[in-house]
Amino acid sequence: MSSLQTEIETRLAERAPDVEVLLAEVVGADTLRLFIDHPDGVSLDLCEQVTNLLGDVRERYALEVSSPGLERPLTKPAHFRRYLGRRARVRTRGPRAEGRRRSFTGELVGATEDEVTLAADGGVVAIPYADIHRSNLVEE
Image (cartoon, rainbow, N blue to C red):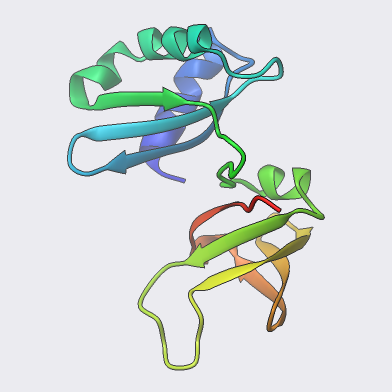
């Protein structure tokens, strides 16, 4: 998780505690894409409220705030645990080594504090969170 995401989570925890930050990612040089969730769902009003709470972030980036959608990002151990039994795609960091895949798609079968376990086409694979570049649910 990026320090920018941690900064945003800390700020929203004080002023909008029911809003969960799923992913904050910088796209290009000057756009910040923020995926949020809320127990009652994500509305346009909620996106606007979050945008207004992050005025200083808007000074640094063009800010896009949206709901996670069907292929919601998974960035924390709790996210993976919440969706055990669902299909997910996990992409790992770094160059592709000879014989080593960088993208895995399969059923989420385990999630500890250190790694996620997928039942993928090639068998069961455990992937440390530190190696994950990006992950999301896959529509079935």
